[in-house]
Image 1: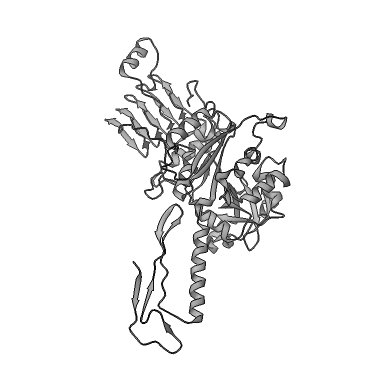
Image 2 (image 1 turned 60 degrees about the horizontal axis):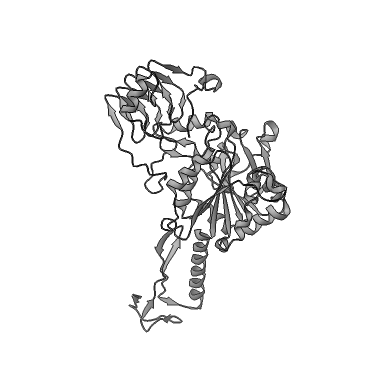
Length: 490
């Protein structure tokens, strides 16, 4: 129905009242905004030539803002093909993005959930090493073959593959090479409406609305945009840093600089939106490894400008910044690269802090994972402090302190778990199977009675017997973890 606004006074000189005393304006239809729909209404009561122009300008700016947040013209590419040597033995039988985190999730759930919550429904996932576990999880958690959950979108796994010719015998050589080997997909019919390509990593922990990033990229007319973190002096040398000018254009890069080279990378981060006080504390910006490319620019860089470059962060983007408008985008929130055993251990235990530095609990922007249909955990006469207990666990007369316990975990009587990450199990053993194993002198899945474990990571499907003590006394001094022989899983 049209919207009518009554005129209550005679028209002033030079003012024309529309519709003989009342203005009838039809509401604009529902408009897609970041995967959601909202009603947008334009209204005008009285105009002169000046106000007509102003109204037209406002309408144009609204349309531009809506177009800048049009998620249907964005495709996400999640890089999940790395060998994960620094996460070994967690990556012995699984890809990095398939490593469990937070008790019930996998690392791949983080970028996938961020895409879903941002309204981005076109996703490619590049895989190479130990991809079976990752493929199984993706098929269970994000199956969109029926076209319902993702509308006209898709989630496709692109596994490294050999092709005819000498060049086709190579596996992925790096992030850029991985995308280059599948660049023909961007010429496909279903990619005809794609304007921007969002490059993501499959082993980071953070919550982000990617469409805020995309909107900034488009409104600033950038060819490439890089998501970055503000960093203080204590951590700056651990990252690849960028230097920007007063328009936030990236002008130089430095990989883990120290000394005078580090000081030279200081920037005024108020340009990116930090307050003056916070900018003084964090005078460096570090790349998160999250990029947006205009599709045509990406294809040109991969195919023609740098056809032999293998990596985005160390090769293509630093070289392209000399010719292309590369902008920095500030993400001033929790972010962690889960690239090492140390960071994996600390990030998990940080979830159990009070308050946690990162939480999977957000009703508006939830983290998704595969639906397991597990029962609630059963806790019998146990003491649990500052810990996370996942679904389907059995805890019997035990003590859990500052730990993360994964799905289907079994913890026996008089067990003490402290500062430990237990990844859980992929399946249950029946009571009959457990009795049979014990009768044969074998160990069921889980932790046997009278066992103490401190400062350890227990992989999936681990079998730990009775009266065992595993205490990693060296962890706090040299960050080494002693891995027992039963640490394996998928």
